[in-house]
Picture: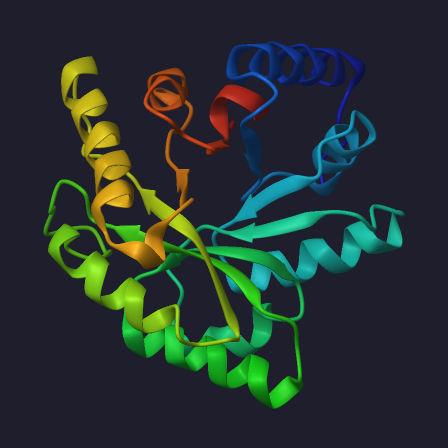
Length: 227
């Protein structure tokens, strides 16, 4: 694993501080750390960052073990990638939240595994395919109200909010997508009261915050471009 030099450390610290200022204190920064070396995560941890996002089950389990050995014992891991049912058992002992619950089948599998282990309820976000792109996973917006109401009945799941990744586009299109997710959370029914919004990434997080994001998932703007 490549060492992180002093210039990299200073640049990372500067980007972190700038992003924190831009999002404000009421928004949770999920540092998207997939493919990043654990040294960089440890630097952010020492600056006070606690929420990290991973997309692959194997990478998550390896990093979590490495960082525990390095004394980073308070990390809250957010799973933000597509989750297959056969990977649920692997990540459940580690994750603080899953942002990509996209089917009743997956929700039932998570609940079943938690119930079998006698674990505490897990925070989950419903992933919404907000622009209805054929290439993306996620619920059709029209499915959210019904599925959310059913999943709310499972005591093993703490349904926290909705998540989306808009189609690439210009500011008006992105803003429209974020606004649509916010309105969906407000209109989904009594079960949806107080839902949080996981939306906004490196190129559009400020728009997302303006439209009500409570969680932003930022990788490149924080860690820098991957070499």
